[in-house]
Length: 292
Length: 231
Image (cartoon, rainbow over all chains, first blue to last red; front, side):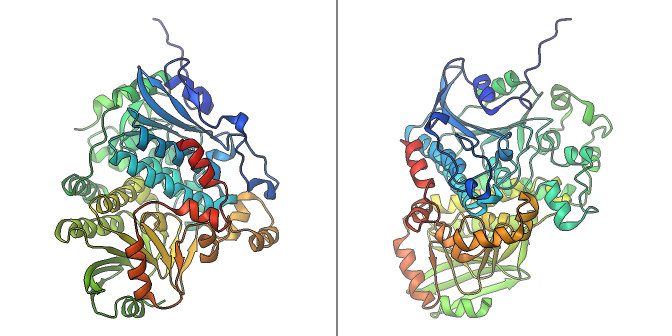
């Protein structure tokens, strides 16, 4: 049996991910680290800065199609949304609304708003959300990739959920309040953030895939993310009263069916899955077993 | 400020606004024209059910009252923090509510958010921060995270944070800070009805907040970076 070497999305840096998603040699970075657009705020906290403020943004091709791409660097301050970080993403989306590439690809890896820049990060995150909704209005789809080491929480969690489609690995985590935040505010009995299995089955890629928010579940392998992203490039569906009523009905049905569940295992059982088996299933196995 | 007083001062020509538990909805007359009123009260937490209640009202407005301005009354204590809500993918529910707001904007409705109570973190994002224009009235409190919590997470001494908060607007709670960052377009202290008509007339549905943050000195990097990347 021939083994394909695994190229982990989880372990890679933002730049390695971008290089692995795009066609080789096609990436052109905008405001690269040599331009040194650093955070104007971190210095007063005595905190280190990064010359790209923790996000890579630029243009390239994916299977020959012109795409814009941004990637949050989880290894710099948890991929957090600071003033410059958020502005780079907003600028890229506004560029896309004017020039209309085939898609914008967003590689999320972020604990949320950068607390040293809480107001700038929060406002900046909503500027990104508005820019996503505007670029979609121009017909350009925004495709989000989740699977980095910091997960995707807070403002980044809501931002990624505004995408046309999400691709995730099992290692991805997506929620608004992170487990540590819920534990701090509501108590350990509300959410034990040290219970890693609980965190993963609540916020992890598999649960998000089974509910449909994640369209494609992939193994933690950059070429798998790349293939899935390429397959999802198609014009953004216009928002209509009918499409949003349908979305709302689907979300209301989810509350009716699963609103009393307190653990993902109960949900998986109700879906007719073997809850003991789900954590061990590969992306392909769970995709095959997912109820229609 | 109290909701009934706010409604009377915003809409002296009359309003028919119902309060169902925490959900505020109805219509009012402003400058002789109808406007939709939608919001929350009692410092509700915005969770999956609240998001769907608000989106349902928004879709009704878009369908039945095409193009009329929507006045969003903001009072919430943030996103609902609970495992069972995150289990059902809370960010998807909030994004759905944001998509409903964008549908209204795309269909020609002006969206003006009036913060009259609390407006915190994910709750303010879900309902308020994606309006065309965002204003505050006395009694409003905006916050991302309390200084004590920022101190805990960043491991900075609270006293140092309190000192820094006197010099810069970038991290500490409060409407004045949000205003200087461009997060609030205006802070009103009186004459709400006339000011509302004026801001409605000026609203061009463009996101101008980074430029405001630059003008006001609170957020001097964002607009330049946006422009450089946009090209």
